[in-house]
Length: 420
Image (cartoon, rainbow, N blue to C red; front, side):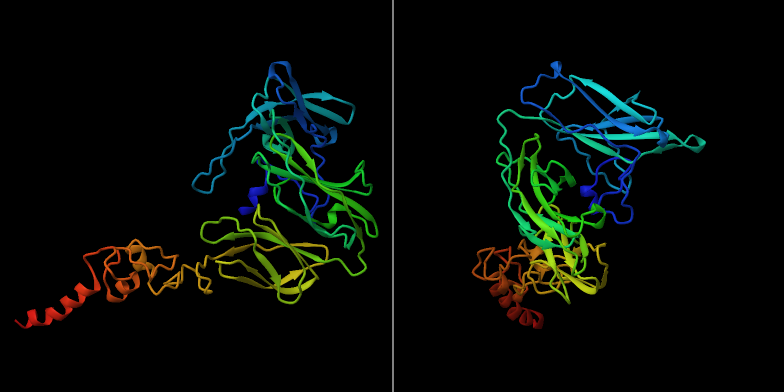
């Protein structure tokens, strides 16, 4: 569905740090290659890059491979509901025993990274199950950047929430401004949290964020009554990084832990993601943030039942009643808003006159008028009559020979002709 916009390609999508149903990380694959950054002008013929993963012997892994998505390579949408087959280049990984418990699976790639930009590396491991069926592990990832000569780093971003030095529950969210890269490069974000202001030892880190909000669930193991420091690092598609300012918050669960409501808001017409929506509760104000980049929103509310409304100009408000929020838990609620061009509370599909200009949409479309713009006082065919006067007279607004005057004259003459 729409959430797949932030999912990665592959067989598996492992548990995340915010998935309260399973807080344990997968131990099938871990310690993938760290991010590799190749300096501008690096000659691929002089460079051999080694990539790999580590697995535990107890997991029974028999083989491993990786797939590489090159810069600018995307899957093209296909009609129907079948999975789109990727055409990423695959490499078989060679096993090297580190000790009795650990195996290193790797591949050496000489002269591979020719083009500048971001290469996404997807790792998989598998074993032979019953009836020779293949059991595939969850996916692991790493990134290779080849930098571009003269490329500018992204700008420093500003933070919206939480306020610096504020008191927060251990379940909270972060909201920051969108970075506009000076070279118009796509950017991603990395959130870091630590108990030390120099971030030498991280308490939590989330990479590859596309949106500008992130919620921290109970699985992040953020401690109560503790001061934490946080920052967001912006990375462009060539690996240039710009750290944001360092700020702090103090955890205090004395007043309870709020519930987390989150979801995606999109148009019911074309499924496009909607930004700048307002999501509110009928019984409490809460703390709200939305992401312009991904159509996502986050709302912190006290636990209990509440009615939730999503509102946006030029769309019909949508309300879901009796949403049950639990302390420290996340509830997903997505909204599909129906377009309402004239903001009259009636969706365009059900509104015979979307722009409220006195002419039906059917008439405007048939006469080459815009059903979403008030053009009643204009004169499309320059016959001296406004579009609205043409509509009211039953004449064509796009035909100068079909006018209300001529129509009236014929209506006056026709009875005499019929009498004769």
